[in-house]
Image 1 (tube, rainbow, N blue to C red):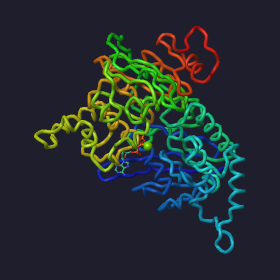
Image 2 (image 1 turned 120 degrees about the vertical axis):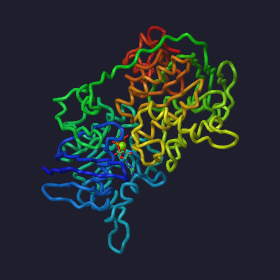
Image 3 (image 1 turned 180 degrees about the vertical axis):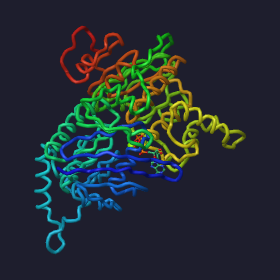
Image 4 (image 1 turned 90 degrees about the vertical axis):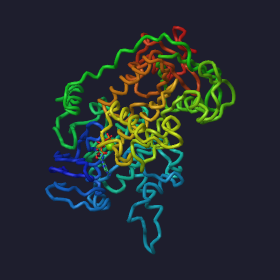
Length: 502
Ligand SMILES: Nc1ncnc2c1ncn2[C@@H]1O[C@H](COP(=O)(O)OP(=O)(O)OP(=O)(O)O)[C@@H](O)[C@H]1O
Ligand SMILES: [Mg+2]
């Protein structure tokens, strides 16, 4: 069995010491989870393994031999494949073309690409993965999950012995996650060593054999998963005991803030009606494609609607995002990277951007006021960075998400729509965000929360509205909601007992 060892890896960026001594080893035939809070150094570490970053100190050793990884191709040629948080794919090219787009050895005699040979190799790999995707489909037509699987397939076409996955299931549905897990296990049984980064602790217990915890750039320990429980793992990650229960929700007493009446967008949403009161959190549950994000986009005026009405405090919401913002709607979309974060700008300027009108004094950007505002949310969300002057592009993935959440909260909206608010966010910050949501609804904010994580929906909603196929399928009061009841509404078309159907 092959063995990949990391010995005392150090790496700094300017004044930031991202890695200060990481050591652990991964064997062929094991799934090795890597966990730690946002900014702990997980992505940096795998970039060292990928030949993207050179470590300042320490060694990467494979089967007793020290590797010199100066370039990504060095890692590839040693059988190390990395599947990043953001997929690098060409949407207009076919699956087959994407599989081999970076391969060096695809040319046959006379420098021609031997498509027949590539097709055979592609088929072989798909068979090994038990994947049923047409090689000629443009990748842009695939789901996120299928995109992930194509990346794994690409690694296998290059005979990867170690596959590293950075939050592979962060944007997958429950079903797709299961497919991915099945393939991960299959690779493991084939002798591949897998490093699996995730913030979802349940899946670590499901898929991993061992787990290594990083804290503040150092490895604090490796354990077999059967020897730890979630509480112990969290304690190792945050360095203290933490109860990961959801906060108590205050009772709802306010008037209706949001009212959606018979909203229809042909082919997407069909006669959707719902309301949210001040101080109320309504959880929108459903499978991917159920129409939850589409509803959010229509309420926020991004997508046009064909029929129906959207009202805030009884007044129609203008049908543009700017109009919706003026009417008091804030929308933190699920794709926060594309959501207006200006990566080369500082945390402060990014936080201040949506609130500019309030931060202007006689036409001049009021820097001290912006700093004050940014610092407040910086502290509230426990952003891990030297300060509010740090550029957003230098933050870890999870910390970037906290910034985009903070900038919307800073606007003090009437209605906050949160699409997957804690995806990719570590356990500590997650409970901070939950606490913040409770606090905000205590102050009378109305919140719509879209989440694919059932415990979060159940723990953080006063009421749960379940969607399926662009329709409201049913509604559950907090006390009647169970995972099974939500899934029954979300995943089946069977008639519903007890009159819960809408
Ligand atoms: N190119 C860079 N320049 C400056 N600082 C960086 C750079 N890349 C990472 N860092 C810093 O290094 C630290 C570790 O970041 P890293 O991305 O490895 O965290 P992570 O564990 O992957 O977090 P997350 O769970 O949020 O993805 C962070 O403080 C981050 O801001
Ligand atoms: Mg990361």
